Length: 291
Image (cartoon, rainbow, N blue to C red; front, top):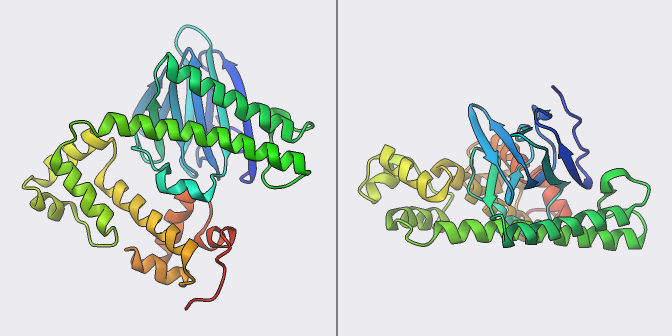
């Protein structure tokens, strides 16, 4: 079953009640980010042969280009909020979350305070998106266009999305850090110190006196993500910083953060940030000759 793909430059939000069996399927995902919050009932998200079941208080984040395949399940309707958006550039340093599967993350906010807080934030996102353009269905608003009141409402809607993502980041941090295995912490510190280095799992494992398979298993258990994904995310964050703050050529930036292939760098950057490196730089006012 194919589902309409939202336009890349639109901020959209809505609240649905879907009966069990209702399916959304976008085999190539979307060109923007998606966040959904289960308010009532339950849903299943599919990633290859893996299945994620969500209930009230579960916030799901799906990155651009990641297949979107989910459905309502259980005995009653699935009530959920959703939004599609392009992040503010300032979000990317903390936007990466431990992944259930590549491009798909879940934060378990809880069924009491966390759900109430997130539900209220999503209601503000939707209200402001709807106010930004009265004639558009489901709060579909072209970002940074339209009358001044629409631009202000768009910024308020983005404020609500930022709040939701920060809630997810806080939930993951509070769950991961207490009692974190010092060997995993050492590997994370090594990646953060120099993500461009040739960080092979076997070398990292020797440094903490573990076998590669044991380190890989322990790392995923502690962080919810693989070593390769964490290294990739760190390199892309470093590349984004260089694009924002320097005039270095894009190809050189890719090489400096550890990518041997300019094509692979550009493809991975677009998948993570929703736009190619040149467009990201232009959006940050750094489109100038190299030095």
